[in-house]
Image 1 (cartoon, helix red, strand yellow):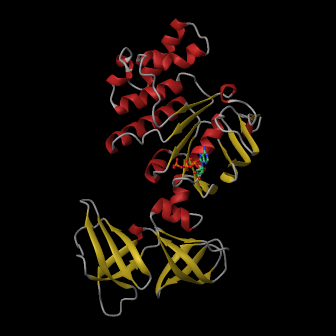
Image 2 (cartoon, rainbow, N blue to C red; image 1 turned 60 degrees about the horizontal axis):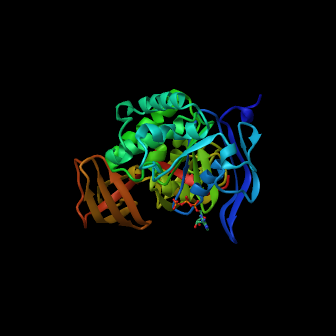
Image 3 (spheres, rainbow, N blue to C red; image 1 turned 45 degrees about the vertical axis):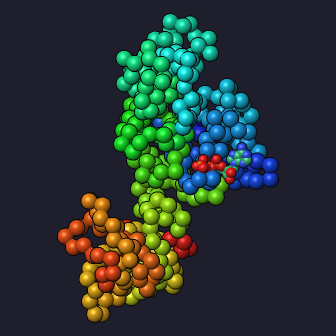
Length: 357
Ligand code: ATP
């Protein structure tokens, strides 16, 4: 049995979705492995929610095929697919207890009430809420309500668990906590999960694989580290790493490394090609070092914004390469607004983008 047929495997084959004449998802192909957590990440309007809803069977596909566990589900309704979804809004029934909410899907599937309640109890225990089973949803905090929504989806033991920006109604601290709990559960239970978010840090923190979407297409798929350290293009570099993209030149390239120049500063970067000449280089904010201006410095600038954040300084610097965003974790030397500085580039945190080998 090949991987595409294992329980939990998901494949999109050249899928397009239109609303009237406007395209919401444009000819996307990707696949995910069973028992992995995959995030669909991208800016508002890029097509990630539509993609998730097509997996759920809540949207029809105009072109292409979708397979789950090797089975072609393209023409199946939501009820005929073995998936369940956790919504942003939780969507709990206010007139039912927490336990009845969690048991709901099982009772609809005509499970005997006693058995349904037992399984709902188990699911609530998994998310740490067993003792709140008798409460009504309005008596819970936002984080607790979201955990109930997760339990309600888990109780159905779906082949694929779908989560649509499940943390967006929570405050920052609770978001990190519930995020980590969801990831722990997914690993512990060996679930296949697809998670939609526009938050890059959330995606980096929980994913085995990230599918970055831009303008209704897939910009890149890879592990968090691959996406962060080797972005496929300028969009991914900027969206994931807040990178500065600057003009440079490849002087020498041997198929592994390229010796590049950025305004005369030399930097060696990984590069599979041998082409030399003009190139775009993505430079993460942490990859730029500032020091006091000295005569003869190659890349220089003036600090136009300096923000103290306790653990780091964030600078905006006007340079001959344009405006650069710089993050410094060393706080022994702080540059005020108006300071004249020299800039150096570190190879770790920089990547060649948009150059065709
Ligand atoms: P967000 O993070 O804002 O939810 P998204 O990446 O999830 O964005 P989608 O909701 O998938 O994006 O939308 C993709 C495109 O399809 C957008 O241009 C959107 O305006 C359009 N779209 C989505 N739903 C509908 C609909 N029901 N009718 C018409 N157009 C739609």
